[in-house]
Length: 245
Image (cartoon, rainbow, N blue to C red):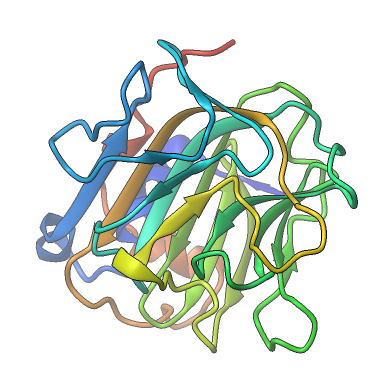
């Protein structure tokens, strides 16, 4: 994978395709430190637990006992940063463990760890976008920083620990959040699979940024250089505590 500086990653996080400072100012960021509370740092919507354990350092989740978040206004243009680990990256029936569900748990498509490799999985016949990092991104019990971004035209990118993982164009809205309140589900599989493609683990921090204004399509001369040139100077999301070793 391409190694990017934290400055570049932070820029891409909330400004990838934004036209300038005015658009940056229009973005809304929701921060969840998970240090004994599901509350948002500035009084925004609260995370909902599905049976895990919340402690001072963060949230310990079991199989399909993750978290959800609604009413952030998230839809087609966003960035999501998560610091987490799985206890065992090969624990599920086929080694796939869902990280993000976009469709209120009604589709097998979504963002997964597959044997420790980041995968945007497309269910058979769906026509949804599919991409993967092609490397081992996650290790058992080792915290990782995941960042995903999407612009209004459907350009979806993923980064792990400051490394560029992949980008793909979403032409059918598979990575748009839908459901009541545009719900985001973390670490929970869809309800259609015959066996849960979900794991156990720990999440330390979640941050969601939702641009308030529409953003233009991919920069001409596409690819990562275009993303970097288009990015501004928003660095705040990356300033997080390293609460777990």
